Length: 140
Image (cartoon, rainbow, N blue to C red; front, side):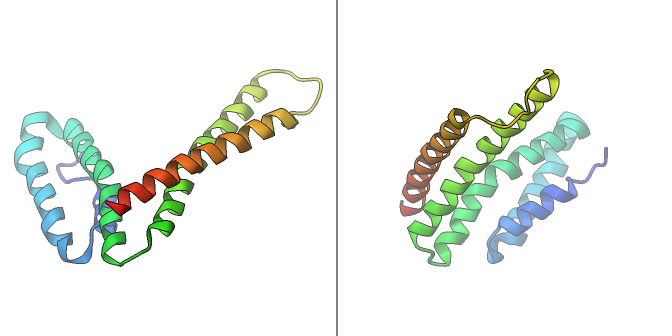
């Protein structure tokens, strides 16, 4: 494990930061990583700390960029709706496929009409919740 922050984490942070703040915020995070966290916690835990800082900062930084560009809240709500609905649905489908791969079946693993209706309902609910949260977050 190197004494430098993770490259991918630095790249993600760099992409999420608005232009004027890139050098300042990325530099401050790197300085805290190198001078405070790394000596106290060691390389493994310091890398975990860095990833934690990057991942918890990405969403607010993207919202900040969105607000500065003057994007309407409806687009932000749509983006939040997609982000809220798609990953859980993909994870549920991956879990269903995994479980079915572990169980010998006489018939094929095609999803039933009830399963599809439930997934569509769940997707709409998650999209609605994500859209409301996104509109509220950007609108503040």
